[in-house]
Length: 370
Image (tube, rainbow, N blue to C red; front, side, top):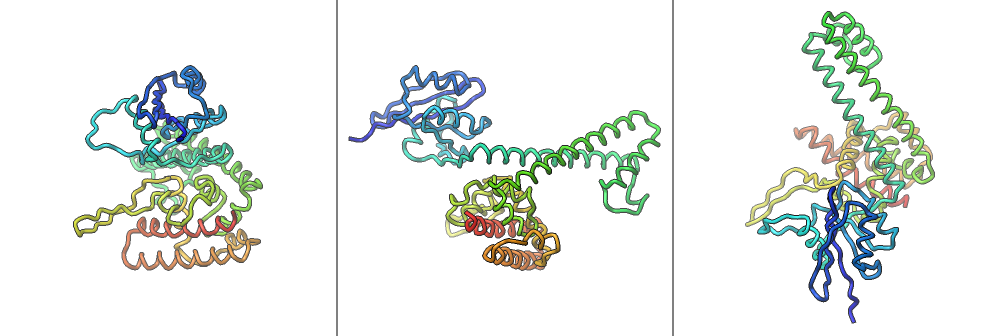
């Protein structure tokens, strides 16, 4: 006799959790809702006599992250998180409510039509959040720099023309900026500049704190070996290495480099029909943090295959197999990048194409380390 497993879909919302319980054997379902809290949800399960043994639960990945998943699994329930972008859609369906969404989740779950995401452990999640927060601060720092540069242009303050130096945001540039601001006649402009410079300095100090913590994380036994291997690649330091490790998770879940390419959103968009075939840019339907880390790394790798003294020092102590992978990666990225640049391809397109190749070498190196 077929076991009667009931499938539960939860639509997560700030105001309430909408729950649909679908019985596949009897082809019927019922709905209820509760307050937006894991504890209130578990109480509702108990009221409706929903046992962990006979029910399977899913909900869409959303702002709550993995907190609901972890609370339900700790209570003994079998829970999974589905990828929202891969949930089947009905073109003719014009109604969308929380109740309908939860009902669709439960029925699709029962029919095996959902794609579930990878759940990192709490340590990897914490490291990933720390790295993403650093990236957020770097974005803020860039916006402050651009805002200050814009103010300087409007006021006719030209650092390059006055000093003959090209590099901005060095100690000399900040000293020059402070001197020129103090000479301004408009009091409000002075205050504006001083507040912005103070914001820039504060954000820069916080980024330095993140950098010191990242260096500490890279030395932990959990990450040390993988960071050592990835740091052998040109353009990869502790931050990029940890980003790749934490965003990819267990590398063994990717059985081919193409899976990583797709996971990062590097797949090419294509429309082929009626004997016609068209290809567009990358889909970007994937992990943007992983994609950005790969592109940032290859910016240095495609310039030259030669390794400088800093890179050679990072490569000390790596095994022969990894050294071969790293060397092959450098040669291939340089040849591919040079060929595309000589063909007149835009720099961004060259970097993205090389980043696709780079992730394949990362997959091979981490597979050998697993």
